[in-house]
Length: 193
Image (cartoon, rainbow, N blue to C red; front, side, top):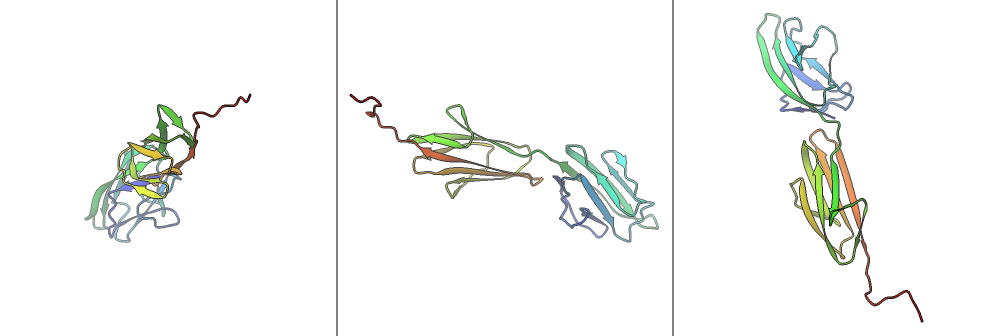
Protein backbone atom coordinates (compact mmCIF):
# COMPACT_ATOMS: atom_id res chain seq x y z
CA UNK A 1 0.00 0.00 0.00
CA UNK A 2 1.01 3.62 -0.41
CA UNK A 3 0.84 6.18 2.33
CA UNK A 4 1.21 9.95 2.13
CA UNK A 5 2.83 11.34 5.23
CA UNK A 6 1.90 14.72 6.72
CA UNK A 7 -0.97 15.23 4.28
CA UNK A 8 -2.66 18.58 4.70
CA UNK A 9 -5.69 19.28 2.58
CA UNK A 10 -5.71 22.75 1.10
CA UNK A 11 -7.92 24.69 -1.25
CA UNK A 12 -5.61 23.96 -4.18
CA UNK A 13 -4.54 20.30 -4.34
CA UNK A 14 -6.47 17.16 -3.47
CA UNK A 15 -5.02 13.67 -2.98
CA UNK A 16 -7.30 11.05 -4.38
CA UNK A 17 -7.29 7.50 -5.67
CA UNK A 18 -8.85 7.02 -9.10
CA UNK A 19 -12.38 6.29 -7.84
CA UNK A 20 -12.57 7.21 -4.15
CA UNK A 21 -11.49 10.00 -1.86
CA UNK A 22 -9.39 8.08 0.62
CA UNK A 23 -7.80 10.60 2.94
CA UNK A 24 -4.33 10.72 1.47
CA UNK A 25 -3.66 7.01 1.05
CA UNK A 26 -3.51 5.50 -2.41
CA UNK A 27 -4.07 1.87 -3.33
CA UNK A 28 -1.48 -0.83 -3.89
CA UNK A 29 -1.91 -0.32 -7.65
CA UNK A 30 0.77 2.32 -7.37
CA UNK A 31 -1.23 5.27 -8.72
CA UNK A 32 -2.08 8.56 -7.10
CA UNK A 33 -4.28 10.92 -9.05
CA UNK A 34 -3.82 14.62 -8.41
CA UNK A 35 -6.82 16.94 -8.64
CA UNK A 36 -6.25 20.67 -8.77
CA UNK A 37 -8.51 23.53 -7.78
CA UNK A 38 -9.74 25.71 -10.64
CA UNK A 39 -7.52 28.56 -9.34
CA UNK A 40 -4.38 26.56 -10.18
CA UNK A 41 -2.77 27.37 -13.53
CA UNK A 42 -1.28 24.07 -14.72
CA UNK A 43 1.00 25.77 -17.26
CA UNK A 44 2.88 27.82 -14.66
CA UNK A 45 2.69 25.34 -11.76
CA UNK A 46 5.35 22.73 -11.08
CA UNK A 47 5.07 19.24 -9.57
CA UNK A 48 8.18 17.07 -9.18
CA UNK A 49 8.01 13.46 -8.06
CA UNK A 50 11.19 11.54 -7.23
CA UNK A 51 13.32 14.09 -9.11
CA UNK A 52 11.20 14.10 -12.30
CA UNK A 53 8.82 16.83 -13.42
CA UNK A 54 5.21 15.69 -13.82
CA UNK A 55 3.29 16.77 -16.93
CA UNK A 56 0.29 18.76 -15.67
CA UNK A 57 -1.25 19.44 -19.09
CA UNK A 58 -3.37 16.28 -19.14
CA UNK A 59 -6.92 16.38 -17.79
CA UNK A 60 -6.03 13.55 -15.39
CA UNK A 61 -2.65 13.74 -13.70
CA UNK A 62 -1.36 10.47 -12.24
CA UNK A 63 1.80 9.75 -10.32
CA UNK A 64 2.92 6.15 -10.80
CA UNK A 65 4.53 5.02 -7.55
CA UNK A 66 6.87 2.11 -8.26
CA UNK A 67 9.80 2.68 -5.93
CA UNK A 68 9.54 0.75 -2.67
CA UNK A 69 10.32 2.93 0.31
CA UNK A 70 10.17 6.68 0.79
CA UNK A 71 10.06 9.19 -2.07
CA UNK A 72 9.29 12.91 -2.23
CA UNK A 73 6.67 14.92 -4.10
CA UNK A 74 7.47 18.64 -4.37
CA UNK A 75 4.98 21.18 -5.74
CA UNK A 76 4.71 24.89 -6.52
CA UNK A 77 1.17 25.86 -7.46
CA UNK A 78 0.53 29.20 -9.16
CA UNK A 79 -2.49 31.09 -10.45
CA UNK A 80 -2.88 32.48 -14.00
CA UNK A 81 -1.11 35.71 -13.00
CA UNK A 82 1.94 33.75 -11.81
CA UNK A 83 1.36 34.31 -8.11
CA UNK A 84 2.18 31.40 -5.84
CA UNK A 85 -0.89 29.83 -4.29
CA UNK A 86 0.93 27.12 -2.40
CA UNK A 87 4.22 25.28 -2.30
CA UNK A 88 5.33 22.31 -0.29
CA UNK A 89 6.37 18.70 -0.30
CA UNK A 90 4.89 15.37 0.68
CA UNK A 91 6.63 12.19 1.73
CA UNK A 92 5.23 9.15 -0.05
CA UNK A 93 5.81 5.67 1.34
CA UNK A 94 5.31 2.59 -0.83
CA UNK A 95 5.21 -0.41 1.46
CA UNK A 96 4.06 -3.67 -0.13
CA UNK A 97 5.68 -5.89 2.49
CA UNK A 98 3.45 -7.48 5.10
CA UNK A 99 4.60 -7.48 8.72
CA UNK A 100 5.92 -10.82 9.94
CA UNK A 101 5.39 -12.37 13.37
CA UNK A 102 7.55 -15.18 14.75
CA UNK A 103 6.74 -17.19 17.89
CA UNK A 104 9.57 -19.06 19.68
CA UNK A 105 9.94 -21.02 22.86
CA UNK A 106 13.20 -22.61 24.03
CA UNK A 107 14.77 -21.53 20.70
CA UNK A 108 12.15 -23.56 18.81
CA UNK A 109 9.87 -21.87 16.27
CA UNK A 110 6.14 -22.36 16.93
CA UNK A 111 4.02 -22.55 13.81
CA UNK A 112 0.45 -22.92 15.05
CA UNK A 113 0.28 -25.15 18.16
CA UNK A 114 2.15 -24.81 21.45
CA UNK A 115 2.32 -28.17 23.27
CA UNK A 116 2.26 -27.28 26.95
CA UNK A 117 2.75 -29.33 30.10
CA UNK A 118 2.46 -26.60 32.71
CA UNK A 119 3.75 -23.16 31.70
CA UNK A 120 5.97 -21.71 29.01
CA UNK A 121 7.39 -18.34 28.01
CA UNK A 122 6.67 -17.54 24.38
CA UNK A 123 9.10 -15.12 22.76
CA UNK A 124 7.41 -12.96 20.10
CA UNK A 125 9.38 -11.08 17.46
CA UNK A 126 7.77 -8.75 14.92
CA UNK A 127 9.54 -7.82 11.71
CA UNK A 128 8.27 -4.48 10.38
CA UNK A 129 10.06 -1.18 9.73
CA UNK A 130 6.93 1.00 9.48
CA UNK A 131 4.83 -0.33 12.35
CA UNK A 132 1.62 1.49 13.23
CA UNK A 133 0.01 -0.80 15.83
CA UNK A 134 0.36 -4.09 17.68
CA UNK A 135 -2.52 -5.88 19.36
CA UNK A 136 -1.72 -8.81 21.65
CA UNK A 137 -4.41 -11.12 23.01
CA UNK A 138 -3.85 -13.95 25.46
CA UNK A 139 -7.12 -15.82 25.04
CA UNK A 140 -9.52 -12.87 24.55
CA UNK A 141 -7.74 -10.61 27.07
CA UNK A 142 -5.85 -7.75 25.40
CA UNK A 143 -2.34 -7.11 26.73
CA UNK A 144 -0.31 -3.91 26.58
CA UNK A 145 2.58 -4.12 24.16
CA UNK A 146 4.42 -1.54 22.09
CA UNK A 147 7.75 -3.28 21.39
CA UNK A 148 8.80 -5.32 18.35
CA UNK A 149 10.13 -8.07 20.61
CA UNK A 150 8.58 -9.28 23.87
CA UNK A 151 7.79 -12.34 26.02
CA UNK A 152 4.39 -13.72 27.01
CA UNK A 153 3.95 -16.23 29.83
CA UNK A 154 1.48 -18.94 28.85
CA UNK A 155 0.02 -21.46 31.31
CA UNK A 156 -2.20 -24.50 31.05
CA UNK A 157 -5.20 -22.22 31.73
CA UNK A 158 -4.67 -20.43 28.40
CA UNK A 159 -6.09 -21.51 25.06
CA UNK A 160 -4.57 -19.12 22.49
CA UNK A 161 -2.11 -16.31 21.83
CA UNK A 162 -3.04 -13.94 19.00
CA UNK A 163 -1.04 -11.01 17.59
CA UNK A 164 -2.33 -8.46 15.07
CA UNK A 165 0.20 -6.11 13.41
CA UNK A 166 -0.61 -3.20 11.12
CA UNK A 167 1.93 -0.98 9.41
CA UNK A 168 1.44 2.65 8.43
CA UNK A 169 0.53 1.62 4.87
CA UNK A 170 -2.31 -0.54 6.32
CA UNK A 171 -0.65 -3.90 5.56
CA UNK A 172 -2.08 -6.15 8.26
CA UNK A 173 -1.10 -9.60 9.55
CA UNK A 174 -2.81 -11.69 12.20
CA UNK A 175 -1.11 -14.79 13.65
CA UNK A 176 -2.47 -17.09 16.31
CA UNK A 177 -1.13 -20.11 18.11
CA UNK A 178 -3.31 -22.46 20.10
CA UNK A 179 -2.23 -23.97 23.39
CA UNK A 180 -2.42 -27.74 23.55
CA UNK A 181 -2.30 -28.91 27.14
CA UNK A 182 -0.46 -32.24 27.40
CA UNK A 183 -0.61 -33.70 30.90
CA UNK A 184 2.08 -36.36 31.34
CA UNK A 185 1.79 -38.91 34.10
CA UNK A 186 5.16 -39.84 35.57
CA UNK A 187 4.25 -43.45 36.46
CA UNK A 188 2.39 -44.41 33.30
CA UNK A 189 3.90 -47.27 31.33
CA UNK A 190 3.03 -49.01 28.08
CA UNK A 191 4.06 -52.49 29.16
CA UNK A 192 1.76 -54.85 31.00
CA UNK A 193 2.77 -58.03 32.71
